[in-house]
Length: 230
Image 1 (cartoon, one colour):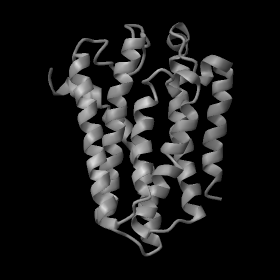
Image 2 (image 1 turned 180 degrees about the vertical axis):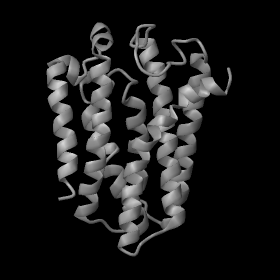
Image 3 (image 1 turned 90 degrees about the vertical axis):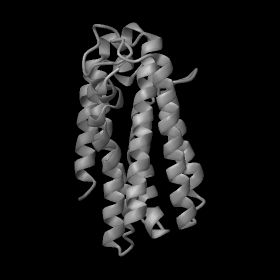
Image 4 (image 1 turned 60 degrees about the horizontal axis):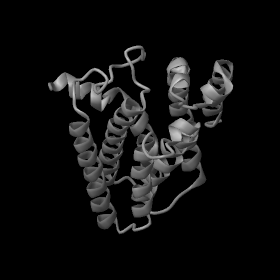
């Protein structure tokens, strides 16, 4: 194993999607006079760790289910390429999720916002069961819904609430815009992986309803996201 192998396992190019709603929530908290640097940085670190753990679990689950093959397009999959073992990546996933939970608990205890504890645990669970477990969301066509929610209103509103200890509808709508744009990234991936996903029974919406549907779905989420600020 080398640094390059872990680079592909961590997939840092996915981080902008994870941190965009945190930036939105923090910016709106600052605009409303509630800026808290420590809370904002802690939220940023937590979502990056959850995203990293999700990427690890995604690599493990897709490899075990046969979704990642030599024909798979896109970035290199470390397990399929034999660069890292399943056992090592599983341990790394456990470690980063544990770190995310510890950081989340720390900032919640400091801010005394106990309501966010179940929200944070739900985010970790969503990261794991997106592709893992007996009924993984990504394999049932629920990927778009989860991305819109957790990369959108949940992250943006949670970040804002962590700093302001209150919530407003504009924050939720701003988060929804982030989630819709992130969903567009997922739709592109599902469109790209249509044949491989179909072969292994990964029933994304693109597989269920066809590539033409995915094109219209992509147009809808991007246009809707662009309209939300208005």
